Image (cartoon, rainbow, N blue to C red; front, top):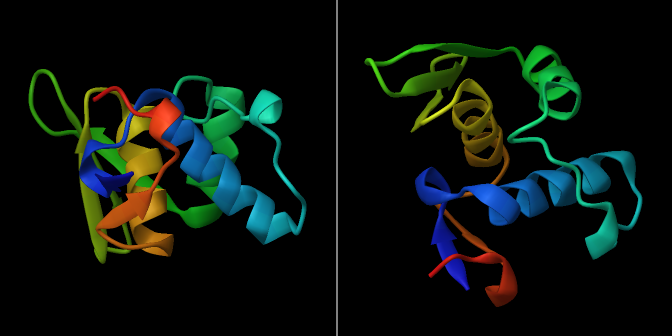
Length: 104
């Protein structure tokens, strides 16, 4: 299923980030090994640092993440905003996600 990058969340967001990381490191991912990049700082933090993603408050309930002012995304938490920004920098405005990982 196609999902807009700015709307990715939960398992779908984690799956896309894990897939990108697997491609970067040249290994295969399996569903049981999907990292929780959007909820665990130990998983998402190194990506934020490596990709130099800046995260700051957007308003009282949201965060904005930018990478060298090229991509910017908003999310309800710093990690979600940052992981959406990472996906946007590597892919497109829409990504293919397995149907079982979407909440629709």
